[in-house]
Image (spheres, rainbow, N blue to C red):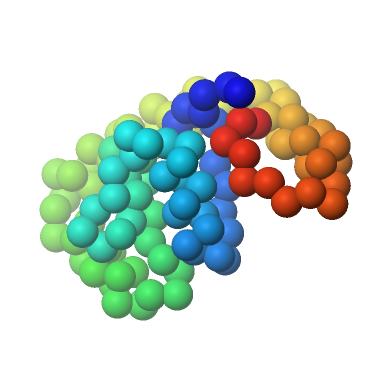
Amino acid sequence: MAVPTFGSVLIGSSQVDAMKNWYRACFPDAKENEMGAFEFGGAALFVDPDNEGAIADRIGSVAADPETASHRATVARARVERFTLPQIATRYLAVYRDVLANRGRRSLRCEL
C-alpha cells in the first residue's frame, strides 16, 4: 500500500468521527490541537463543521495572531503552486477508478 503524503488528495466527510479515524490511521504524524482539529503542515486547519464554538474559536485564534496567519498563508500559497490542473485531474481519475473498482465495498483505505 502506498504511504499517503500531505500532497495527496485529502477527503472530507460529514461523518466527522469516521473522517478523523481515517486521518489518524493514514497520517499518524498529523497533530490534533486542543480543539480536536488537525493541523497539516502549517497551512490548513480543520474543524468540526457542526461545532459553531470550535469554528468561532479557530477563526478568533487566527485573527489574534497575524504572524501565524501570515505564515499559514505563505505555506498555503507555496503548496497551491505545486498543483497543476493535469496533476489534480490525474489524482481525481485515480480516486474515481478506485471507487468504480470497489463498488459495493466500503473502504477507508489510505492509498489513492
